[in-house]
Image (cartoon, rainbow, N blue to C red):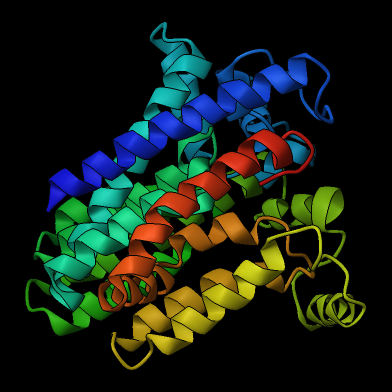
Length: 355
């Protein structure tokens, strides 16, 4: 089961690394809108949020509310640790991100196998590797680490290794704001599978412990446990998550904004439709996990980042894998066109737009 996943990961990473070098040369030659400095492929892969994670890793979090508080600490802590042992942050961080992406794909396959069988498990992981936005799993972003930690925790708990899942669950809670959502599938596994009550409870609580640790740090260091949300509102979203922001998003749709120039609205609709379509075939906690992964970011009134947030919405990729099994020719086309579209995004879209 692992071999085709590793092969898909290796081939798509080669393609995306080549595209990242091409993109960097376009930026260096002045052939692309410059939103970040770039000369080599690693400059492309640390662009946008990667540069901010590097800033956080240098000095961690200031005592006054700042942009840095909008980024969860798992990746900055890893980068800071690399620096402490003499490994360059950029090189070491990109190696870790790519290895985490591979580990996340394997974990997704192991989570899927008990639910839908080995063939669907392999297609799900391969389909995720070939997804156009999966190039983010090679960037200095939190997604590869959240994927590896969250689905690794679930895979271990499915096999009764609840205590082993706890560190990964905590890491998922420290990786990004929606890492807490992994508590839903962990709860479903804990309720269905026997075992020591304390171990199962610890497994379920682990993502909340990670999130709570970061909130507690912010409370002591900045004076507010919600400094993350406050930084997001002040520096990016300009709105608090809620119904008013959601209505603003509906207004944007009614005005037909974003739909021409961005993939995010189309992918959002596709994610939600696929997740709903899988609802009868998977346990309800997975449907809730997938829907909340997409809907919570939408509550800020923006599409920005939804396409990459959806990399964690695995029920959508289960639907894709089932369709691939039913229509083999279309599946083969997807395996080629998915990475091709990813190359287009890296070379022509990424220099001027955040993924």
